Image (tube, rainbow, N blue to C red):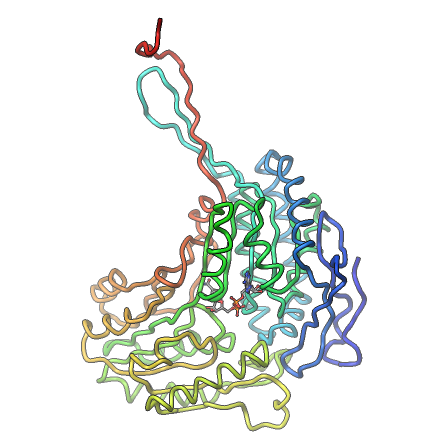
Amino acid sequence: MTIQNQGGNNPRHAKLQSVQTKLLINGEWVDGVDGGKIATIDPYDGTVIAEIAEAREADVDLAVEAAKAAFPSWSKMAAHDRGRLLLKLADRIEEDTEYLAYLEAIDTGHPINDCLRLDVPRTVLCYRYFGGIADKVEGSVIPVDAGFLNYVKREPIGVVGQIVPWNFPLMFTSWKMAPALAAGNAVVIKPSEITPLTTLRIGELMMEVGFPPGVVNIVTGYGHTAGQRISDHPEIGKISFTGSTDTGRRIVQASAGNLKKVQLELGGKGPNIVFEDANIPAAVGGSAFAIFHNQGQACIAGSRIMLHESIADNFLEKFTALAGSIRLGDPLDPNTEMGPLTSELHQKRVLSFVDVAKEQGGEVLCGGAGPESEALESGYFVKPTIVRAKYTDRVAQEEVFGPFVTVLTFKDDEEALKIANSTDYGLGAGLWTRDITRAHRMADNLHAGMVWINCYKRVHPGSPFGGVGQSGYGREMGFDVMREYTQAKSVWVNVDAQIPPFYQR
Ligand code: NAD
């Protein structure tokens, strides 16, 4: 059931023809057992968009029960039929582009243009890619001892739990659900309590295109209750988590009870290295995209710009001018290049890092505050912020997760590598150079799960995404992820083997 517009009198919410506010359990839209609600807030003006049903432990239990019941027939369905449903979903999402982009913009603060050009098309691409992969997950035949046939099947795990953060809710739910479903698993997914709207809309579209009841269950709830229950639930065989490193650690502990498979996509502190031979205009634009796109709320953000000392002044002059010219505004305005941060709490956290930087001698070159404009004062904005800092400073080591970038200089490749590899994280890294040998040497030696050469933040469902060190383990996307969502079963057949006699009497 769809609840009609809850947007009240806010004209920004007038296009909210309908918005789903309930939990999806066993193909039905239901209230939480305890009847609790969570308000989802528009970060542009702080108004309530809708009250969403709150899932608690008992709701997660019901969702897992439904998923468990749905799993046998879903996993035995012909793989191409599962794929076809994902392809139909991709088409349906594409048709719904405008509405999904609108929901994402009001719920997260992403500029509508970004939603239309990146979030929705990448989501479509992801469901399409994994729709196509569903019937291509092959097993193998192993050459073993004469007379025996040994074949290995990849089997789905069963019920998988998926926990998603608030920064790219639409895209990240596709990264999680598409491969898990293609592999034949049943899903219990929890979006972030801060940004549930597009996940609920995807649930509606899934029901529309004919996903069987219980195959996907959506539990909108808080982390310490619903998220915790997903993590410790004895019937969930695997958990895929994207979020902060601290929460990741908690999930690993909670999952120990039934020894779940765990896949973690955690924080990052991406080094973005500009060498003296770089194409400077390209590096300036690319570095701005690396840190300022989505208000810097990206795990793979290029949040540490490292400049060769000979080009630093030239680069910084252009880069600070560009940062200062970024158009902050209403996410629904197609001219807006940067929206508000997704929550007030997060805005305060990001701004607190300005003081942290200053305490350790950092110099704010640009931004460092909310915008002066009265029109923007009720939104959770932070101006693009550039801080000169030492590589050992807290702001150059800890994830800020906002439009906040540190800059420093280096003198040679060796020093660049030392600084780049100096954090506990190892997610994305970028470098700008025309020297192909240097580019590959750096890519080989950077402590990172992904490296971008003369570009930044490229992703594709065919390419594995994930980190090393405290950025997590396991991979999303690429063919690798089909291994994450399946397990090997080795089957031995005595075809014509003469087995030496043991225990014969
Ligand atoms: P978060 O860890 O606070 O929350 C992420 C999700 O976990 C939310 O759905 C939340 O409700 C849930 N959660 C919170 N506590 C939980 C608990 N005890 N048990 C189970 N679930 C719990 O992170 P966030 O603030 O939503 O997102 C920002 C973080 O996510 C940043 O650190 C960012 O780097 C990281 N991130 C990583 C990637 C990646 O792919 N590596 C991508 C995006 C974001």
